[in-house]
Length: 248
Image (cartoon, rainbow, N blue to C red; front, side, top):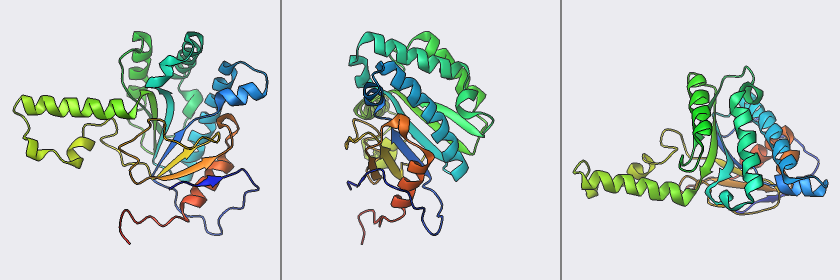
């Protein structure tokens, strides 16, 4: 379902409803934000990182249980080497001091995606942050890093095939639940709502399996300008949808 909403004066719902359990966000528009201001793209990424701090904490206050953000795709390696290097430095900075991102809030941080191609330094930082926040329970922030939906499904199929070849699994046992159990998101529910700012209206290889019945919300606001008010607007629109999951 395609839904377009330009940034207008926000009027909250008369009755504040519970938020979706799982919200996914494609953090798009950092480069366009910077270009409009005559700044390098890296400035847009830094501004977008600050927005992630605010939105993560806002989601936690609202009662969202899972927030999955698209930070770096498998296709992003095609970008100029200097930009990729700056993105990895920015990521490393936030992993070094993860409290900049979550403060004292009860937020768990996980990183999903392929580890192939990531530096040893980044991998060590990821492990350290995941271990340090493992006992936090109110909100889980999933950072999709070096992530691609097709790659994720392909890797899951490869692992299942290995189990069949090893005699640990029968072909007849393979069903949707089995496939889902081999994805990066095996232990969390599928996204209820997918938000994409910046004016683009596509998934860009993000959570292809998991978004089969997600609601989509688009905005022309670039990610660095995305606010808690925009998040609340998206949630209000979500509650107006009739989610039938193929039924009537």
